[in-house]
Length: 169
Ligand code: FES
Ligand code: FES
Image (cartoon, rainbow, N blue to C red; front, side):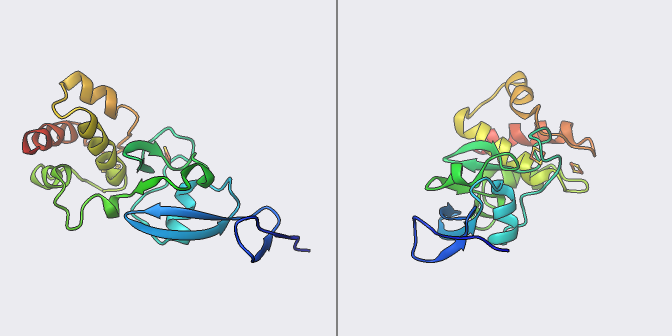
């Protein structure tokens, strides 16, 4: 049996545990009807169709699902979608229009990716680092990136690419 309730944000009837949530993703507005506790990652991938952000561990331990929330790196696998409402969400698809972000350019220059699975999370984490610290030291890079796991072991190239991105400004 399906339970329905009048949603407080709209005139439509939704299953009782669902709400209509306004999201601002990559410069576009979206409205989704979901359980407010649904992780943002699921909403981005399954409701909005942005599959560049990946599911790795689901428990904030690998960094594959990293996106920006108001410019800060966040693990979208453990962030309830309700916590992202009315905030500015940026995914890998929205980091730049044509791959011209310095981190993306440096990633190509250093041919960082191997299988690629972790790489959108790595790039989003690196971009957030450089936004807050334009010229990080080796130690600062290691600290900022330590939560992003790469099973292919691309760490040396990631660090080199971050340094190149910093020089590109
Ligand atoms: S999938 Fe979110 S941190 Fe691993
Ligand atoms: S490039 Fe394969 S997991 Fe990182």
